[in-house]
Amino acid sequence: MTVDVAIVAAWETDHSAELSEPLADLHEMAVVEAVRRAGIEPAAVDGVACPTHSPVELGAALGLDVRWIDSTYIGNCSALIHLRRAAAAIADKMASTVVISGAESLRSRSGLLWFEAPTNAASMIGQFEAPYAPGPQGRFALHLHRYMTEWHVTEHDLASESIIRWLFEQRRK
Image (tube, rainbow, N blue to C red; front, side):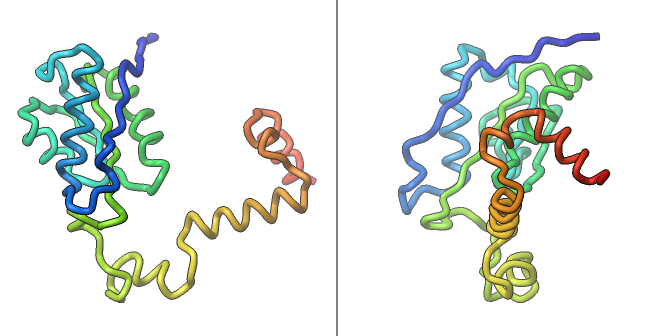
């Protein structure tokens, strides 16, 4: 069975750099404007995916009747995971219209109640990032750069499917 799924709107708030804007407000502004630009009624939205704020709270704050949520947080790739899972939820009739919100206010850390300061040794950052310098994204980038240099792989190569086949061939050798 094939189900057509489409991205019908995207919007980026211009308030993300403001120091006083709470994270929840950034999410709400982004979702309200994206839904408006999509030309759909808010009542049609029955799925919310949001990595840095509770999708349940976001749906409730906007008066949405949400029956599918995703709060997976894996850093900058969260939106891609949410997109794939939203498409699957629509295909499985768990939702019909899903909004995906990704908002951060890292300059101020305004509203980031889930974030614990690196000085807290029990926090994720305190345990896994602060003691070892660069975070996971930085370490990945360093390893990827070394790999690209050693094997003469370009960014164009990484974007092509042929690199995947080549990598598997190299592992078999």
